[in-house]
Each structure stands twice: as structure tokens, then as C-alpha cells.
Image 1 (cartoon, helix red, strand yellow):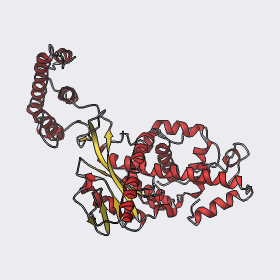
Image 2 (image 1 turned 90 degrees about the horizontal axis):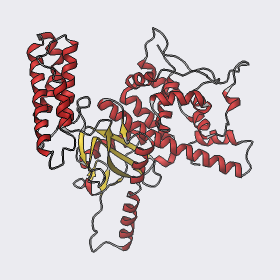
Image 3 (image 1 turned 90 degrees about the vertical axis):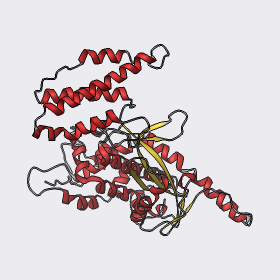
Image 4 (image 1 turned 180 degrees about the vertical axis):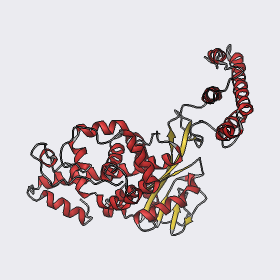
Length: 446
């Protein structure tokens, strides 16, 4: 059942009131008063039942998702930080300073599943809309990057050992007696994998790898024989996945790199330090001059950059309200010159008849295109897109959207802090609070 946030205007004589503790000129406090919390209440109310015990307030859960991504925290650490930080509590809609955890960390998992990708996309759209005129850009910059999944570096030996352990777990759960568990044999074969690239150990390591794959296949086939019809149907998807992993070759396409995240793809980026990244591709679009992330879309697998443009531009149109006239991209997007109302521009030599003005304009555009590279770097290092810990395809999309929303909210906090400093230097302390709220409601730039 839906719950409601406490009234922040109500006073209490026994507990400290947050408005008396916090600095009202703090950027996070100003942002809390500017957020359209009622819009989230109306949008997410349909996901709640009218009966049963009341759930946590919608504002609390949305604010925890935003704070987690904004300050690069986890589900457990954001709940711990919330207890110690009065500004976090004020942002979440609390009227009094609380001394206990707001919720269990697993409630964040349930809330993400409750609102789904569309709900998280609404949070991202609000982060763009609050930018005001800065988000209304006729030209955008588009680029793609890899969002790594939280998996170990995949090897054939690791996958074979995981299949062996999974088969043992299934046999133990179903009370099946295996002909041989291969516990000691697996340990001995793993010892032979140490220093496998050394010339003296290469032959033994290759033989040990073949033996591990043979053992894994043997256990899979034994489970298929011994499981009854109804129980076999329950484990059939897992067994089919195991067989696909054991049969795949080095040059195969759509390989499986993780048993618990089979959708993970190998993305070769050509970097010297990290040649391969295992995860999904993310397309990022930002306004050319103001660096507002106006579109961020996650794609399963490793599609060509040109095939990601159409969906990215559709999201930009739904978020901003209009299609951009020009999308500036790198040479990885060659092959597309126009999609709908948007012209796609990539670096290429101009003709001899091009004027000096056209050359200077083109050079300026592509110099500005490089500004998206540090934006992607910040999305990864500061807003949890470097390694995605959320499960499944929906987890990939949710993490990317929340990273883009956090980047925009961080930009808002900097703009608010800059506005506060300017107003203080101008000697307008008395009307600071009213002026900030009025300016923001009119969607003016600071």
C-alpha cells in the first residue's frame, strides 16, 4: 500500500527539526525544494496496492536512488550515510532528524523493480527538464561507450569450474547421487593452471583445461539422465546454457561469458591498457554548448554505433520535447547522414569550394565534440557507470539512466551553489531564499 511523507512544516518540541539544523542556503536543500516530488507521487502511485501494510514513502525511495548515484554510494552505504547526514534526510522529505535507518537496503532493489525502466526514465527526464534553457539545444553531441558488468574476467577454465559447481549444487538440492563428484580432481587440475603461459607448463595446462571441460560435460549429461521429467523441465534452461558454454569455440559469435549474466558481450575498444570490456554498449547524447546529458540509452550486446542513433534521438526528442537539428558524432558513426529531422555530421575533409567560414565552423564543431569524452569519464568514475552491479538487462538500462540523471543533478548543484555565491556577494541575503525559488520556477538560468 502507498505511504505518505511526513509534513515538513510541522514542529516538534522533543526532536530537532531539520529546518532549524540545516543551512537553507545549501545547494542540496535548495534542490530539494525545487524537485517536483508531487509528479513522482502521481506517476508511481499506480504501482502500489490499496490494501496491506503501507510501504515506504515514494519521495524517500526516489531520493535514496538519486543520492546513491549522485554521491557514488551503494544500496547499503547510502542508507548508512542517510542516518548521519541531515541534508540527505531533508532531501528525502523528513521533518525531524531521524536516528534509525530509513529502510532496509533491499527495499531499494524492490523499488527499482517496482517502477522499472520507465519509472527511472521519468527521473532522468526530470533531471533534464530542471536544466531549463540549457537543455534546449539545436545541436547535440553523440558518442558511445562500454558499461562493464560486475563479472570476473571470463576464461574457459573458470566457466568449466562454475558449471561443475553448479551441477553439484543441483544434485545436492535434488538429492541425486552422482557417480563421481570430482572434488579432488578439480583441485588438482586447477593447480596445473598456475603459470599456464610459461613454456614449461603450457602443455600440462592445456591438458588440464580439456579435462575440466570433459568433467563438466559429463556431469551435465548425468543430470539430464537422472532428473525426472518435471524436475528436468525446471533445470532445462540452465543445462542448455551449460552445454552452449562447453560447445562454443574461440571464433564463435554471441558467446556466453558469464553464467549469471549471459547477456554480457565482449566489446573491443582498442585501448592499450584494456583491450576488451565485458558488458553492454551505452549511447550518450549531450547538448553541444552546455554539457547537459539529454539522452542515454543502453543496448544489449555490441551493435554498430550507427544503429544506436535512431533510438537515442527518439529518447532525446521525448525528453527535451523537440528533435535536434544536428547530431555531431565521430567516424564510428559513418554510414548515416540523416535520421528523421536530424542531420548526422562526422569529421570528413571539406571540398575545395568550401569557404573559410564553413571550415572554421566545422572545425569548431568537432573540437566541441571532444567535450563528450570527459563527460563519459565522469559518468563512469563519479556516477557508478564504470562497473554495473545491477542484475540483468533491466539493471543495465536502469544504471545508465540513473548515471545520466545524477550527472545532471550534480550540474544543478554546482549552478545553485554558484548562484548563492553571486547573490551573497551582491549583498542580497534577505531575499536569497525567495529569489532562488522564483528564478527556478521561471526556469531561468543562474
